Image 1 (cartoon, rainbow, N blue to C red):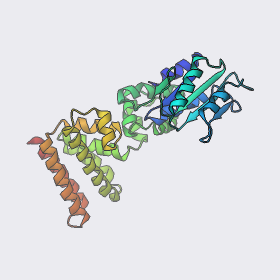
Image 2 (cartoon, rainbow, N blue to C red; image 1 turned 90 degrees about the vertical axis):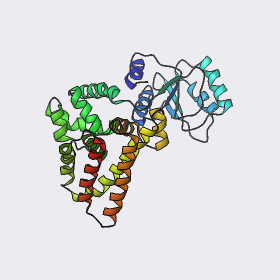
Image 3 (tube, rainbow, N blue to C red; image 1 turned 90 degrees about the horizontal axis):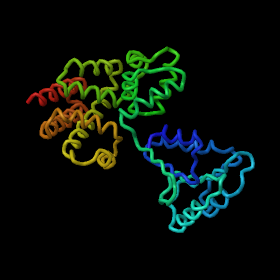
Image 4 (cartoon, helix red, strand yellow; image 1 turned 30 degrees about the vertical axis):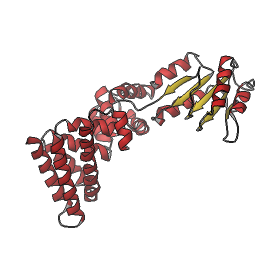
Length: 311
């Protein structure tokens, strides 16, 4: 479910007696949760404490609101028992006209609930959101600039919003604006670097390294993260038939880095990636033990990766 679809339902007064809000993307889940709380006043909103039962929530939501048009009662962060589910289903069959029950981050499906699951969006799905958000904030951003902002921030909506606040006073946000005012995330530099190598571009790879040269202390953590990323590329190659969401969960990574690694891995065979990874491990050990400087290790890693691609 996309957040603005949820918001449009609320805006036109299409309010259900029982909502379920969950999903891996907490940014959108929290927005939807806040929208449901906003249906009532603070005095007519109640979040059920851990020591109170679902029956207490049902009793509370049936009370007529004192200050607002609706009474909102929240059951969150718990697992519903079978008896709880049955009680909620009986309530939904004959709900209070002024009541809204909200299940937030709660296990146990209830027949009749209106469920909204907010999972991470793809880059393509997120671009129109960013364009719309900029417009709602009183500015504008081009699609290409939105795409670059998404990449630079690793799809972090919290950071995207903060960066938009910073750039909107400058006028229409272009790709050049994003490049000038947004610091790429550390992981994005790894993506950019790896993409350049996958294209066989020494120039592109050294452009990334030139940014690191401003602070030589960044070389070592960058090299370590680069090794981790090459390992992720190999995993995506070996598990090519495993769905992205399932693989990301198994490896403990976010969907976006996995998608980037999968795309970069198409330029190599599994054998080539394994060869590069073994070389990276060796170089990392060499510079950590003082046998070679980390800058020299980076140079050798670039040469190894680009030459492996050409074989």
